Length: 110
Image (cartoon, rainbow, N blue to C red; front, side, top):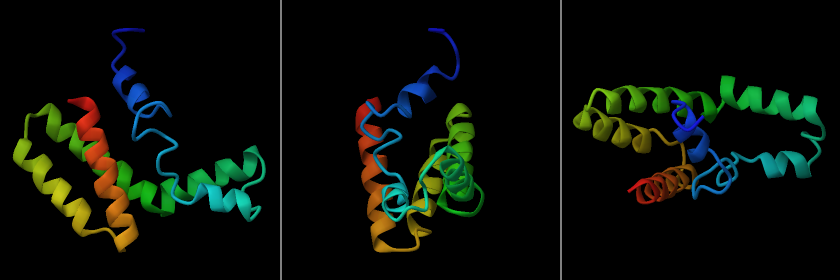
């Protein structure tokens, strides 16, 4: 397992990592509080909707592109993609979340 290629991704998504799975939930806590998410089935539906129709989709596309560019040592491409991601955020709160999460991630992997 130590050499498995998905190990860094699993570590990065860990709740123990500063920008892990629980750092920014895209409103899941509110969905639970309002009762929209109340069991496994509704959680799966909610997560699927975020990935298919919400910010999870664009986040996944951006992560895939960044990963590809990083593997190709395209530092200029990664920089440009980062600037585009920040510019495309729909509101100040989401922009701030994106910047804070990115800064925490960059500091943690140094």
